[in-house]
Amino acid sequence: MSMDQLISKIVATKNPTVVGLDPKLDYVPNYIKEKIFEKYGNTLKAAGKALLKFNIGLIDELYDIVPAIKPQVAYYEMYGYEGLKALAKTIEYAKEKGLYVIIDGKRNDIGTTMDAYATAHLGLTDVNGEKISAFQGDCLTVNGYLGTDGISPLLKVCNEFDKSIFVLVKTSNPSSGELQDKLIEDHHVYEVMGEMCETWGQDSIGKYGYSSVGAVVGATYPEQLKELREKLPHTFFLVPGYGAQGGGANDVKYAFDQNGLGAIVNSSRGIMCAYKNGDFTEKEYSKAAKLEALRMREDITSVINEIKF
Ligand SMILES: O=C(O)c1cc(=O)[nH]c(=O)n1[C@@H]1O[C@H](COP(=O)(O)O)[C@@H](O)[C@H]1O
Image (cartoon, rainbow, N blue to C red; front, side, top):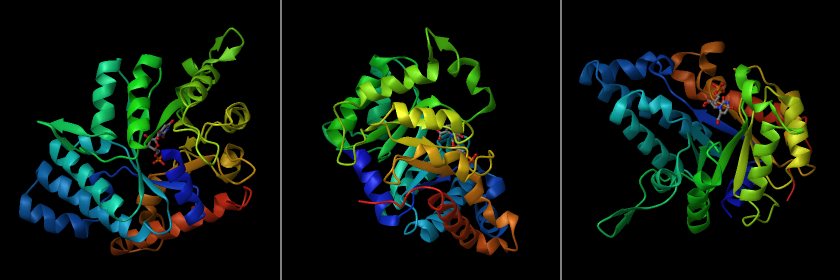
């Protein structure tokens, strides 16, 4: 079960956090950009190369202390196919280093199209009988609001290739309650979506008690995190919103179970841009990221039960 692969890496690193690789050119230190732009001009190709170099520097410092990375596809799409090339190469490099890769695409569509997304990010693409892994993700974030026929193709691919998904349940953004907190009979929309995750995952529960179908629940909503942890015993949580969006260790602690498992907390800008917030030179950007990742691990593990297994 693929969520087992993620949880095993969390246990091995004793670190329930994931680094979001959401790079923009503004975040890339000048010493990296200067050389590349001199050679390739102000082009998307140069941008893609700069993002990749930035990411590789981060991965080199972080791969042995964090279990996973979460590249958000939008930051790469912004630079066209050269950006997507940087995404594919980033994933390839992260996997070589043993990291679990959560592709943050938040995909959703009708079944046939979801099948194509599942193949692109988690499965194998057929090229005249040759089966090729296009993006090589271990996990994909998705939106479940089209219902079961939009999720079923993903479950099939997860089952076949030992992959997992995180479904949006209670998102971290300020407006998330406009729809997600509405009541259907006596249940909030986010509770209904959470229950759907339990149902979608019921045939893929692994050795840690969690299924291949996880849920995204924001660090900015600690009460809902606590409520959902109690109501969804087999659903592993991806918790964004720590750091740059204001969430702290005390907000995320209820996402965890008695074994210190049950959730992985994301920080993107907090880690990528750590060098901008201290006495660091640009050349120390990856060292600053490592120090912030270690601080985040300490911050979160100090308020949850010891990670056991
Ligand atoms: O699915 C996500 O990862 C996600 C869901 C959500 O509810 N809120 C949220 O912020 N995210 C993503 O988590 C990351 C948060 O980035 P930072 O705020 O910079 O740490 C971004 O990649 C967001 O797209």
